[in-house]
Structures are given as C-alpha cells and as structure tokens.
Image (spheres, rainbow, N blue to C red):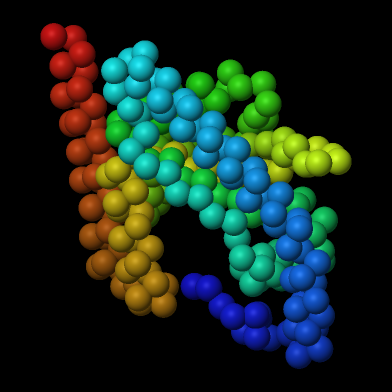
Length: 220
C-alpha cells in the first residue's frame, strides 16, 4: 500500500521535513532511472518487432514500467535499516526502476532472457526463476536485475532495473492476488490462500496446455 510522506513509519516530524528537502534533491537521481526504463522500453520494442519479422509472431503482449516514488523508497530504506541517502538507495534497493514484460508463452520468457544476454550494454546481475521454482503461494514469474548504462550530457550513469517477465496467465493471477491482499490488508484467511494456490496451479496448467497446442501447430 502506498503511503503519503507524512505517514512514513513513526519518524519524528523534523525528520519528515528533512525528507521533504531530500525529495527535492533526489529528483535528478530518480530521472536517471526513468531514462534507464525508457531505454529498456525501446530495446524490448525493437526485440519484439524483429522477433515478429523473423519468427512470425510477437512474443510480447504488453509491457509496464514504473519508477518507485519517494515515499516507497524511504519506507524500504527504513525497513532495511539503511541510511536515508541516494547512495544507500542505489546500493540496497534493486527495484527503484521496474519493468514488467508480459509474454504469450512460457517459452517466450526464456527466449527474451537469451536475447538480453546477447546485448553487451546490458549486464545481468541476478536471476530468480519463480517459474521453475514457484513461491509457496503459487506465484510464478522470472525476475532479472540488470544494470543499464544511461548516457547523460556530461557523464554515464549505471542504473539497476528489475525486470519481471511472465505470461498472461501468470500476470492475471498475480494482479488479482495483489488486489485481494490489498483489500484484506494482507490478512488473508488460510482457506483463501489455499484457493489462491489452487488458482495458480490452474493458471500454470493453462500455460502448459497452450504451449503444447502451439508446439503441435509449429510441427504441423
């Protein structure tokens, strides 16, 4: 849940006022992450169009990007016990910039990762495969932390971007699961968590079924 700046944990008011000034100082820093996302959006648009030209189908259904707002950054730094500085944020928070890629098939997800590996300007720092190893609640997605060079007028900055790549079914489940937890203030009864896990398994079955159908078409 997003909070206003006056709701940041239980910190004293004078510190919150300091954060107001800090927020102004951070505007330029956060712009770098927006530029990094702009570059990644362009990169995936080119990949998608070229893939469609070569293979006859567009692997990407849609994308969504965002830069964490100031309040969320402060909350996360406080939870981690870090200093409230841009240096600490860059070092300890990997998802200041976030990009979600929704693909048609599971195979497209792994193809996108392989394509990214061929891009010398992108450095893959970390991979978490929640498709092969789902979370206990049934969540499936492939997460990457990448480092992107951002070319400014007088220098080059390197910004980390978290990329989540998932199928339509995975995205549908994750979106509704988030809304349910939000509506219930994260206090979801066991019977509903069991049903959510069952729904995640059904979504996974649909992904496997659709990939099987596509494979049959490709082989015909």
